[in-house]
Length: 117
Length: 117
DNA sequence: TCATATACAGAATTATTTTTCGATATACCC
DNA sequence: GGGTATATCGAAAAATAATTCTGTATATGA
Image (cartoon, each protein chain N blue to C red):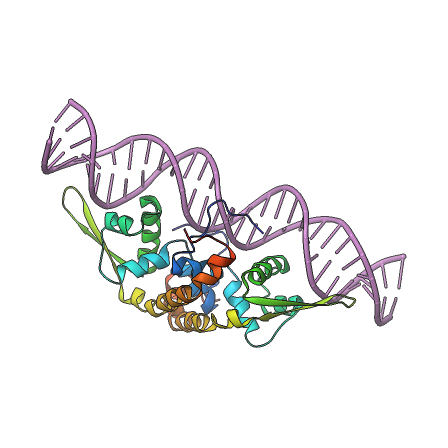
């Protein structure tokens, strides 16, 4: 995990929650892992726009934060699996709410900002 | 406003929602404005750790995104007020869920990472 | 032997966000 | 006049996040 020079204010509940999921990929990772545990390569297939490197980095932070579990199988070629933890599970309702909000307002923002590509 | 080189993928509902609130202060701003509309100086008093500059920058983005409304009163000294918009209001359930989650797990993360200062 | 797949990680570079500093303009009060 | 408060903004610096590239190691299959 990146060692912050300006620490997160853990006494603000909102900032605490935000700090755990506010990255480009963490919420997507939680959304993927909620269905089933996955290997890094599978996760990359599910989220092809994320590079393996960034997935690796963010998964490590999520393991440190206790949101995700990592299991290493001592095989060759190496195999490991990431799974959502009970703590991570408690974030799923928030993920769902964001997912639903995004679906409901997608058109608005596509009209406003982007294309429908 | 910063002109992104890598645009947000609006077709991913999760990433869309995240992109609107994933900053150090936006969710806190929404939480403040839900109660009542506020002037910039009041907002700064409510969120003293945020500099006026960063509040200004983020409010502007939120106005652009349609989450917040700005009213300028042509007085001197100048007066302006920011209020949450109907669209912004639809995010409040998510803010609440994050707030509640943070409250419930604050102790855990304070033990894990920080002090109770 | 060579290409492929696997997981992981160091390092440099680029992208983005936040902070810090300072400036503008105006009215009020001492 | 000098201090305060108001809102806003430019520019640069610093902090943080994400990308890109490269390298390790090992097994399998052509």
